[in-house]
Amino acid sequence: MAAAANPFPEDFIWGTATASYQIEGAVREGGRGPSIWDTFSHTPGRVFAGQNGDVTCDHYHRWEEDLDHMARLGLQAYRFSTAWPRIQPGGVGRANQAGLDFYDKLVDGLLARGIRPVATLYHWDLPQALQDQGGWPARDTARRFADYAEIVAAALGDRVETYTTLNEPWCAAFLGHASGAHAPGITNPLAALKAAHHLNLAHGLAVQAVRAAAPGAQASVTLNLHVIRPATDSAEDADAARQVKAVGNEIFLGPMLEGVYPADLLEDLAPVTDFDFVESEDLTSINQPIDWLGVNYYSTSAARRRDGGRAGRTAGPPRVGPGGETAGTESSNGGHGPGNPWVGADCVEFLPPTGPLTDMGWNIDPPGLTELLVGMARRYPGLPLAVTENGSAFGDTLEPDGAVHDPDRIAYLESHVAAVAEAIAQGACVTGYYAWSLMDNFEWGHGYSRRFGLIYVDYANGQARHWKDSARRYQQLIAAQGRI
Image 1 (cartoon, rainbow, N blue to C red):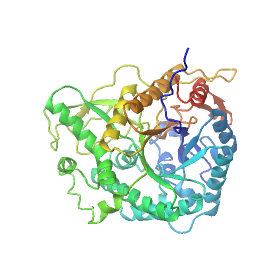
Image 2: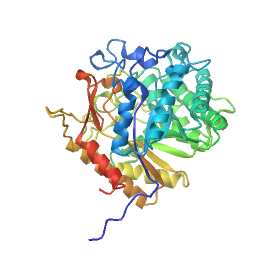
Image 3: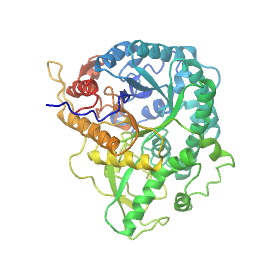
Image 4: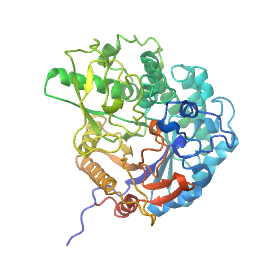
């Protein structure tokens, strides 16, 4: 019998992803300063069971062990984030050498094991000192981020070839400043829009800083692009889906990749702001060429117009996704924020998800990933794409013999890898797939009650690592170059 054709290019990259605050711990070691997530998680009522990231997976001390796990998995790349408060404790000024030393060792350890380091500069751990000075709603934070990006690229640029400026700025802006479900826990729609713009500006300035400090490096950004379908064939529901996608996707795609805020987005948001915080040269600064676009994907949603409402007119109290969450992104958790992250879309509601769900309450829709990748490839021909996060949370049980059997996660993994293969078959230039996550970790507003990892972390017993069945399956998929 002939061997199955390989659906993936020979240079396709298989990896996993993590985030600094979710795995590192050691929040008061090595000169690290406090972040907004330290403050948020230590505020009563913000995180499930009052949990926090003080220790989490203790990756700061166990990084060599974790790199050995990566090597056993056969990873070709590892997407990690550098912690801004570990490198600049106050968010400004000279670098904290101890913080740079940690990432220096991490990068060298990856390269020694034949694993490509992919560095994300911001995965939501803003230094608290900068928050005290206004945070992302303040323009100066974007400038400070560019300074930080230059420090990291200058220190690691001789070995790290790929930098991602921001991870999921939608979550940082809207979950952090509109719903309040994420740090810093603000519920102010105007602040959320200012934060979104200054995150856009931070991206553009950081791309320029990275290219100046490490001329040979690749620059990218990772967006959690929402796949929102209209609930019915009606024009009203079609416009509801458009409106949500405008504030979920176009508010970043437009400025970053096209140098413009779309007219329909500005019209939708006119009751909230006239965007007078956008200065004349901002869009030029934001619209910097990137080498590839990271796409994070978990699920899809269906939206409809409710109560006869129309864009820009409130019809009753705002409603969001099931349980108060927003759908379509691993990071859109929390579930107990009082506000609505969909600024300007108060007349939109999401239908409850159907079919099998993950522990996050999200639907499982692999064709949605194909749809997203193919759609982006057609919209931006010539721009390579990578799936920088994709994964699922299920209720894992550690058996007495150390085994963790997770067939649902294996099925999720296989079906989404197949969805990527289908996107490639339809002409999308997809260059890599990064499973979320390498290991269980602090899952933001859910604390430790949700497990996304391929590797089980036994928090009650010294953060011991145990491979789940899904880790072994991913190991097989990498070895077989994605053949299911």
